Length: 386
Image (cartoon, rainbow, N blue to C red; front, top):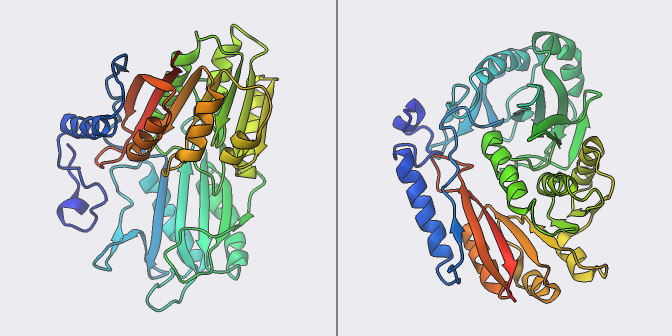
């Protein structure tokens, strides 16, 4: 259990379990997970102990609402009482983020970036999004603005900002013109030549890009991918599909492990985001994996329409809604020998596993990606029933 002034003063209630002892947090999450699996045949299930997260400084990304005045900007949240709360000292962020935020506050004033006022619908700067690579400690900074009007002011002060923070290697402006509680818009304008951060988990290079999903708890994410590797590396797998692959974390880890015994292992990764696929291809090249095909397609549509030889392993890492009944029934019919299912929503996962009637859950582990909240990640290994 950690102490937080913001929680005690009821200014920020994001970490709703922060006053609950950590072992009890894990126990409650495991209980919830078991409830979602209650209707399944668990007679051959190996249940692994939850993977624990650090309790502080575990996030690699900060999403800061910008409020206050241009001379004294406030970076944090606007709570339910419509109070602007400064969270630059939040215990979830690495300690050195506080120093970065201090420089950014000064930059906001120098560049004349007036914080956006929701009630008055005036101002320009809505959010500051800061992401760090644990691998090389480079930073990505994104300014979310209402329009492009202030970009020349940012560019005017940019060299001074980078002199103070040389670790800022990716800087962008995102345009979000709507008067709504939307984090970002579609248009991303790069102010630096470098456009991605390189991260590494288990010696596998992965790339963090603007507007792309990437796990915010590197310690737990690295263990999640390593566990997937361990579970499948000795199985008879010559080809695998990674559906909803994102930047390729699961597929690349599994293909790399399998390639040690079979250099010809074939990986097909499917993700709807073109920029994610571009990042995944870059990772595969750096890994030295040759027999890899990443495509920008809808994962469910690809699986349902593709007529190539079925894979030995299918990895699914869907959004919170799960894979759904149609895709689950298709996987039942195609019936690959092995499946890895990674989920951020055990409720939808439980429904999907019930639909996957031709499979038996053999291994499962909870990964506490989000301590002090009710959320968690799960990894399960399914084996086709005879």
